[in-house]
Length: 368
Image 1 (cartoon, rainbow, N blue to C red):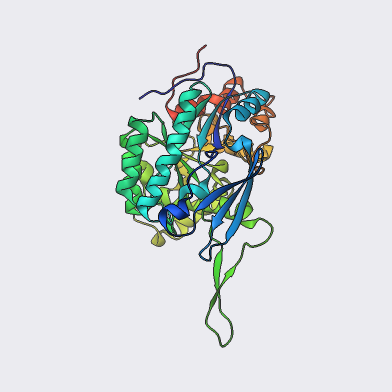
Image 2: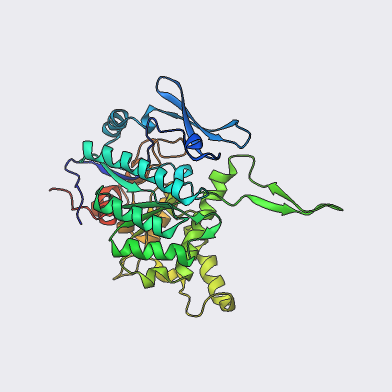
């Protein structure tokens, strides 16, 4: 299935997030806490709040109108030369922890919203759906609906489902279905590992928060989560079993590019700890006559890191990603890529600014 093409000059930003401006109170709707509600505090500003068991609200993040208003997004896109944004929900909305039917209903609401924005602005927005991965049957049902009825090219999923890695058979079943439906899969880190059991003298071990300071879950946990997801899929032979499956990892593949040598060496020196026939991760990189086996976005913030990605994956497996509209993203999408224009060919720059995203999403090439 082909999806709407970019018809204006400019780049495609594969990694952006969006929310509806309003949605029902899911805590009241379901009868239990843990959901994110949106409190509009003043014009153009709102607070994402998690409901707690005692009825209190915990602030998660302040957001502005660029997180829900397409008109504001279009202004920002025009100012930064972005022709198309690929919209996906904010990862905290995955709600894998919730009762499956409730998460399924919320996913439908979020996906309907994304699809409506894409229908209203077909040349400016594409969308990736969220699915309730805690229930594979419901997840595949929603994936089918999004492909058949909403014309969305793929899905965004987290790096784990309630602590279960992506090599779990139930998750692989969904990935196999995504390949069957030619749906692309964007993998974004979430629920980062941060707790550790701390043994105390003459006391039961207690859980301690190891990432409470310095924004550690986002700065350290997210890159590690992504690496864990990549390794889980590699060593489970997912890419060999489903060769047509298009997978992209956020944030430049996390810490995987920098630790690839260690991972590969460990695979060889302790082969007894891996499944028989587990592949060498080095074979997943770009080869002279073969592209890398998965995609990454360009959100690495630093020229040397982007050069490393290009050397490992090739420009035809790197897509512009900004994490718009959040502060840890790239303020001017594509600026890092363009900063290497004197070192790279026009083809390499064009790949990363748009052509790679088109290939990943399965949309036609840009009009010449």
